Length: 581
Image (cartoon, rainbow, N blue to C red; front, side):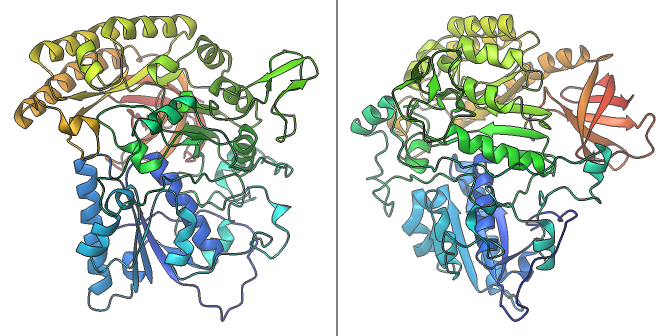
């Protein structure tokens, strides 16, 4: 199994004692982008702790599998991957001495993993990322120490330079500081200077949402039925000072702005896996974004289980009076109470967008995911007013039948959702909408499904994902009656996707003749005869692609850079373009 890709160019070498033993670690990350960020943090911690990284499992002294446990298929993929890494550990000639399992599967099956797969040497839960050091046999560095032995405050965001990693045979895409030999930076005709180190608020000490506190009292986060699960919920949040090695293409990065979830959805166990909702301080997120931009990142995707709840658990820090100092410039230690010009309110996602969008060098900004009843007028207005904020909403609606939504403990209805969509489109012209639905939820009737089909036709969604209902122990729906047969579930899933395919094909045809900016990613995943990229309307990895068959005035294209293109053809989900500038 290929663990990661090849590093890019770097700068000055690091000083490292040649006799120091540096264990080699191979990393496999499964699941969602939120899990990917956790993997990047653990890789950063391991490297800072003295390890080196490798893309080849057969070359690793230590193997780490960061698992997903969201639905049955994800759990099965996680188990299969663990067993594959077991083979590397016990195979003749294999050098792996340790196998570490991390992530959501650990929160659910902590004891089961160790009992049934004795080759696993250690487990690390979603709230224990820093424990990866002890699991790997590495000591945790003191807070005062930095990568080169200087004061910790020298770099507010400890992304390692590529040269440091290449020296030790690491093979991950490293977002190093711009160097003269960076094709992307050269193409942009100049590099951004590194931002000055600014003090950032430490994660921790925040309050919780009243909704989360109530749900905790009602047993929403209970893990008593999970043999081996720890009683305490995860509380960890990384900060802009946490070391992190990015595995995404050089020009793009995810920033996790919050962790956990308080919603009561009966099909979901994420609250039990990741804990109560908790936001990172706004100043910490801005500091991280500045550092990423200085190192070549041009597209930032903000992620969280529900980004639209951002800030509800933080202390008030945003002046109510328009003339009062902005939270983006005020000290991160602003106290609750009065300030010059008025009192304070809690930060919101709109405030975060307003703080990030003006950052020099940031070309594209988007966020995933939005809860339908949290899409405020102010949030929509913030999306509309910034040119570099994607006119894009990913709102997992889950269903359109009021009765199904009620059993899901989601609330809402087809008419309510159509009203939300109409309002959003009126405030944000050209808005792109993505959603996901679950078919086959217990008690879903043919009439419920038909209502969902009718909704999809009326809503004219740009992007759509359909999941087959999966029974999950610990989820409220597990004990519901009226389970839908698997054959019926799969039939409904195929029928809904076929309907959306027609809608998408028609929508893609409307793209023909459009001129737009695209971010070129590189050679197509399907054929070396084409290159591929994305427009601002297409989120990384989940939406369609822009396939490039004509480089226009350029002999070559530089991955990770932006070009002007004209759409010339369309398919069901992808479009074809030629470069015009």
